[in-house]
Length: 214
Image (cartoon, rainbow, N blue to C red; front, side):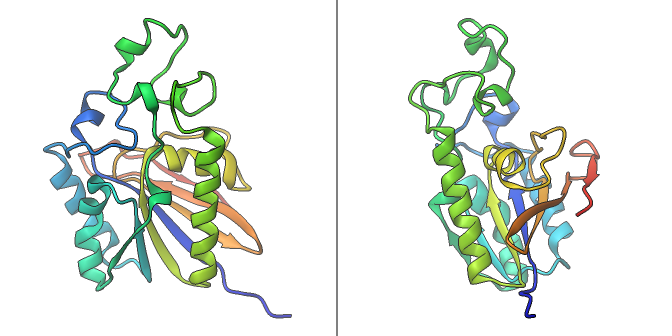
C-alpha cells in the first residue's frame, strides 16, 4: 500500500509591530514594525538557517514579508504572497486598545475576545470565513508539496484558528503565540496534527516550549 510522505508546515508569526507594543488590534491593515523587530528577525533567521524549507508562502502584509525575507534569501527561495494568510479583518476594532473596548464589552479579554466568538466584532470578517480560507491554503500547500517542509508566514489570529478549529489534536489550552513564534504542523493520512509551538528563546521573548506528541 502506497503512503504519501507527511508534509511538515511551519506557521511563523511576524515580528513585533508598534501596535503589538501598544496592545492594539492591527487586523488586516499595514502597521510598522517596532524597534525590537530587527533583533527578533535576526534571531528567527538564525533559528531557521539550518531548517529544511522547500517553499515559503506569506501574507502580503509588509510585517510578514520583512520578517521572512532574510530566511528566503538564505534558502534561495522566492516568497509566494497569498491573501489567504492575511490577518483577520477586525472591522471596528482595528487600531483599538483594550481600554477603549472594555467600556462597552464587560468581561472582554485582549486579544482572545476578538477570536474566540465571545463577542461580535462589528464589521469584522466572520470566523467561519477565516477558518475556510486558512483550510483552503493549507490543503493547497500539502497538495503542491507532498512530503516537503513549507513555511507559512502569517499572523497570530490564523495560528489561533489552526489550534482551535483545524488540528485533530487540539491542545487543552489554545495559545496566543508571541511574535516570531513557530508552530509546527504535520499533515499525515488526511489529518493536520500540531507537533509543537516554539517561541523565541532568547532574552527578547519568554522562553516557552510546548511539544505535543502525535
